[in-house]
Image (cartoon, rainbow, N blue to C red; front, top):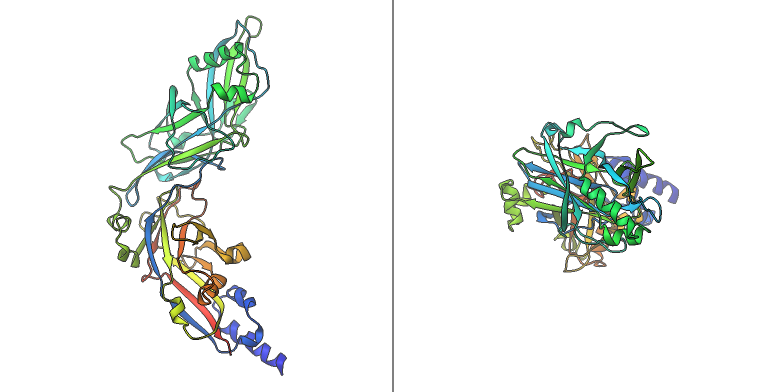
Length: 428
């Protein structure tokens, strides 16, 4: 009899489910409690907020560029990086003469590809202060610049494979630097400043890559500094050697960080209103921008009252976040994944959601191109709220990889399709 009851219960849950994997939360209560399963939509509150500064030191990629966006306004990104010498105790010799010196930046991707015909200019500076590998740097820390050592004007769509000594390499921007900078490095070797990386980085703090704002729409360009193709290569000759090179690398063993700046003064009026405190606007439309731009606050204010006085098991809770019908989405591709964090105190500090800790794949956050929404499975988070195990302070929604991916997204609001669908059963 028990086996028959159990089989009927499972069949009922499958029939009630829209998708088979929606039943992944059923393991949080015993089979005997899975009778009288109900499905309800729980009200929620959501609105856009300015995001805090984010950690950008030692990230996988770095962004340099600018972008004028008709919805999100202006975004500007620059970065700095330490350099390292390729060997110890470098001495070039008293008759060494620099021939050329180049900064190579390996291209990873370009955001707003339809604008690649916009010509851009980058300035390259010496870093004006030391940065340290064991320190942390955030996106709101302005980069201190030293001497200007290079400038390039280029078309992002023309960044292509280039030839160096060893042959053809993948899409890389080649930026000529000042011979005075090369001579400064050669002269420093006579004073023992290229003895090792510790002494080298005390005198040569690193480089800064900064875009020059011009009258066009711009692009945000993602660079791969960890690739060996990203480096500074100096060529020189002596009285006995015709062509010698020295490579100064940027890799995972040196510090680097990005600085982001946003100007929302000519952004969408709906976005400006929400950033100025109009939370009601979030009922219809929401704005999510990475690079320390915007985040979305989400809360289920009536959840405890909804089940007040009743004991329930949350079989599944699915937060569904549909995308807005955005006419600019073709020009500004949306992110493939979002992330959700639990607000743990009144200061706005966050922690991982319990469901993420249990299973990242079940937690999800990926974009469903067929249903045109993002979703998160939150049965444990929801269950803990109903049992008052967690304080109901809300959640923060962000773009996944918010420090290295420029993709932004416009979403439907809390009364325009965003919803928390809860499957639950009463406990006898």
